[in-house]
Image 1: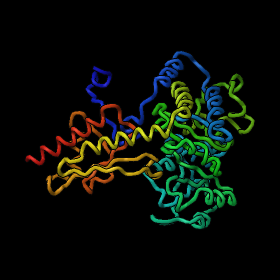
Image 2: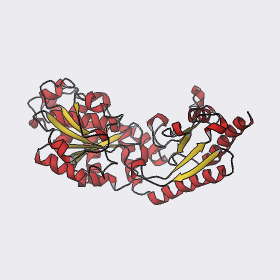
Image 3: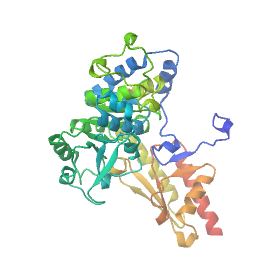
Image 4: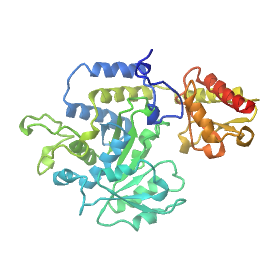
Length: 397
């Protein structure tokens, strides 16, 4: 019996991808070992954050970087930094921002389930454009004295190039935040958003990096990273004996020391910081092309195994940057012949043994989507077997 089963929790087959609700990803043994070693010592967190930030800044090409408890935390802290800058009085007010520069402009086609982070920091979202398109001129028309930042979501860059948006933002002295939480499917994404001029870029430390799921990081301009640090670290200290690195936390830049900022609840532990750094090192040692090729083989095995199963169609969906750069598989049932909806189908997959969790975006068309990143050895056969069982039982009925 494993640790989950001892609690009455059943491990599942992750055919969904890098979603937090299934645990994100699995960490390599080296990451676990580094976290265990980190757990055995005390350390000054401000010094650890500064040292980790230098490593990540070197990797990403940014001026500075900072480890957070996840990409959502990185996004909240980034918005907070753009609202306050290095103004301690503003830091102490958040999330109450009446009268402050608190507007964050977003293209409507970039709106998503995670942009609530803007409001969590005290920001107010201002939409521009339509569901189908947005122009840089649409942003320029919305700039005013209350504009704090632009929030950009990669993936639809053919419709709104980041470089064009950065150019407009620069002319109006407005910082650009990129929410790149799940865009580490390609190593070049760790550097290209900074290279394209983004002021802050938020990443997940779990997902494709395979670090701790409760980790993330933000990289970008040094002044904004300093504002993040001031609002995140434990500020229960006596200034005269504090040993914070001045490059990250210079008390001379502030009128007074803010206390326990809005980011305090998003604290990153020493274990997560060290685990993330180890995972980043391993990330660049991995053969990403081979990883995707292996994922394609797993998907092909599933499609081959379902070929000939009555009332089932299985096909490969080629890699697409919007979907994360991995190929996917689509398994569709003949709803009329089986008398079963896509929702019935996925419930049977989830509630069966083993419990299989695929993607849900095509349930209305009677299909589930298989992402290969989380599949383990033997999962392909289990998926084929379970789909065959479900279809056979409904065919018989």
